[in-house]
Image (cartoon, rainbow, N blue to C red; front, side, top):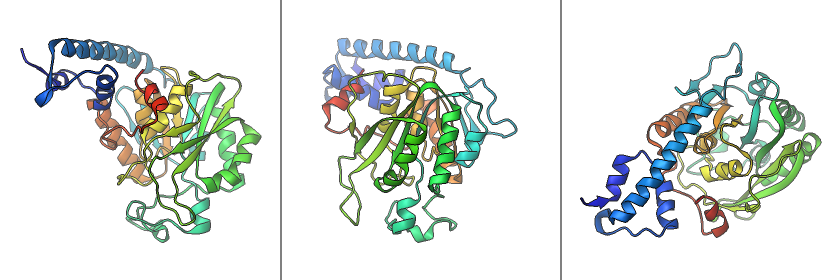
Length: 334
């Protein structure tokens, strides 16, 4: 029998990024036309069989993890057949207010901050469109979260209420919003660190070209990280020509989950946008509940999740965006 990568892909529903990482980590040689030795084929097959079995066991445990009464009186915009993903089309604060006390294990989110755009009016380009078009039919810009101090404080108080004790919160920030809103987070949560996302490639910018964003890491109660090997600078390539405005790499959210999640955790994102946080939660064997006010976000994320659940392939991010940071790359090979 001739063995090849095609045999592997035909026999298993597998994320090609995971397979490629395994091949690299184990220094498995691939011959012409994807040919494999018999030993390599069986090594890969055993690995994937074990991974599939573990995934099935985790899926069975997470099917009931969203058993609490969610948003009583409100119908989800989408709910997966296995109950692992529940999405609402709703304002973030209204959505959080509908959740029971201490019902969430982890909050990971990238709010659509309005501060920099409304103050500087800089948003323009082939991906995000013109800021002046915001709110118009067909505009690329999405509706933003008005990040006044009072509004943000209300948002954070609700995050604190729904989060279980001894749990973590990850909030993404642009540099402009961080200056004004980080002090508000410190009023309500125990801020542990500020993580820098290094996008590896330079981006747009009028006052210095941007290559980074920030992630504020905070805690409700005391909880150690799952690993002591995660640095506080995450070098992950940004998405180029993304189909959704400001779409983030799934690896960013996967690193948050590596640090703070356990299998079966209920992960919440009140601004799920393109759905990257949802895919990360599924890869980490967690359940997910979230909201977004945008029609486009709901449709985009629903299609992305449905495709991933059926094929284990991500239609919105078709390849790994890991960079040349060895410390980060090693974390994804475990």
